[in-house]
Amino acid sequence: MVLIFRKEIFESMVNHCRVEKPLEACGIIVGKSEGDRRVALRIYRAINTLKSSVKYEIDPETLIKAFKESEEEGLEVLGFYHSHIHGEPIPSTTDREKAYYKGYIYIIVSLDRGEAKGYVWDGERFKEELIIVRP
Image (cartoon, rainbow, N blue to C red; front, side, top):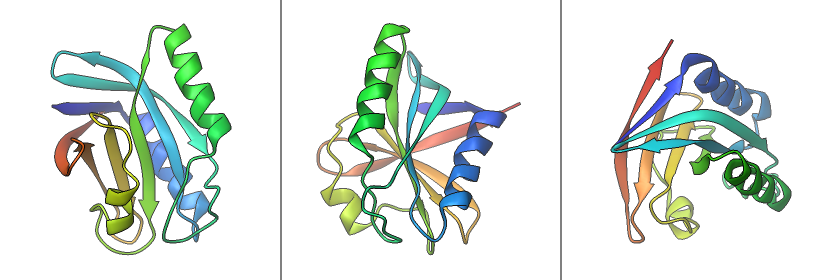
C-alpha cells in the first residue's frame, strides 16, 4: 500500500502541526482508494479536545463532518494524522491503545525531526505504509 499526497495538501497538514505547537495537532485525511494506492485529496484540521502536548483526541464534530461529507462526495476517510512535538514519528503506547479504526492510515508528523511516517492499523499492530508527495 502507498498513500499519495499532492504537495500542497501534505504541506497544509504539516503546517497545521506546526501552528498547533506546543499541543499535538490532529486531523483527518480524505480521498480515494485505487487498488493498492490511496490518494489524499483533502484534510480536515481538527481540534485536539485533550489540549495536550503528548496525546490527542479528534473533536467529534469534525470527525462526523469528515465522514458525512466524504460519503456525500463519493470519497472516503482514509485515515488520520497527528503530530509528535518531540521524538521520532513512530506510534507511541498511547497511539496503539487509542487506534480504533482498523485498515485506516495513521500519519505521525515529527516536528523536531521534520519528517512524517504513515502506519496502517490492522487491529493489533501498526504496519508502516509508504507516503509519496507529488507536485
